[in-house]
Length: 163
Image (cartoon, rainbow, N blue to C red):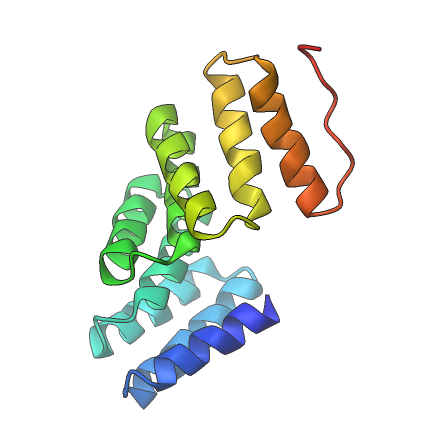
């Protein structure tokens, strides 16, 4: 996580808006401490100062999702994707929000895109497997996705319900 934050701050520094960087950093700190309202306010201020900061939309969307605002999360993650289509975490987060809303096909499509962009993003495999199982797809490939996500993160293997 610390590496992602550092890379995000480096990317923001190259964008030219020092004040936006400060608000983005404050938003990260508040989000980490569980202050999602404060984080959303700071990410919003960073966006106001520099509307091209895809990472600020990414993190604001995650904070909104944590608070239960899935529509707001989807909108922010979509904006992050529009600004940076290679931001795998935005597809992952948007997929999670879609899954929470019951849009399983949309969630699976976003998880697929996240995996294509970053094949080591274990959470995307896990989320995709859960979405497929929730859809009623109890075939072995869905369970393999869960196993693959577990092996990437060195977690215990899930119990197979279809073997």
